[in-house]
Image (cartoon, rainbow, N blue to C red; front, side, top):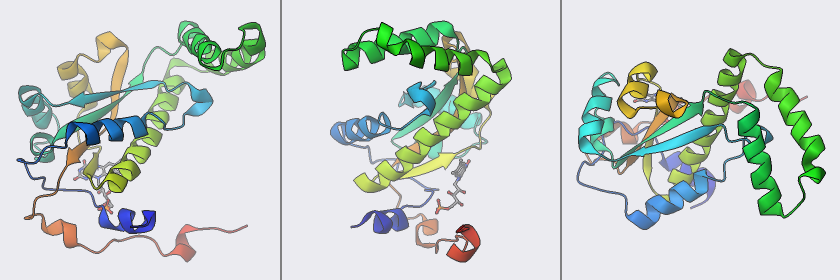
Length: 209
Ligand SMILES: Cc1cc2nc3c(=O)[nH]c(=O)nc-3n(C[C@H](O)[C@H](O)[C@H](O)COP(=O)(O)O)c2cc1C
């Protein structure tokens, strides 16, 4: 299947087959793909929590307006934005760049000052909004990667972020929930799987200049 065929096959799964788990190697492949999502300045200022524990998922379901995907899916993926984007965070990233690319810290001085300028020039609120945007990019990559691997997914905003933070202990980790996704395999009873895709016509969506 081509990518366009795979994205036509996928849909926001409303009913997962609760007995079907994603095999470990496929899950690993899916997560390895989302790890490659791009982010502004490469900072990846979010974390991705993979929730499998049934008891935790029961609590999350209550905090997601009872949406059944939370407990029926194979896993719940929580994208959580970093709330403490500061100089220490940037320094750690610069250390990683120096290590991976085997370059000196001196050669990264200009890059580092540019990043610090960008980080220090924003209010805490702006930085958090920025982090949430990065999390959504990762969500987009996850949606496409899942389709590529024949895994069903439902991206979800219908949940209480403060309650998710509380249940998963995210605040203590300097994180707050941005957006979530449930992953697994569609139930044969999910009639919404057959619904035609509703998308804006190309002439309405695209503006060519
Ligand atoms: C950011 C985001 C949040 C969403 N939140 C929910 C949700 O909480 N529950 C749900 O069932 N579907 C949710 N959806 C699914 C959308 O309703 C769905 O993607 C859209 O209607 C297009 O349909 P399709 O994905 O099946 O092609 C969400 C989708 C996105 C991208």
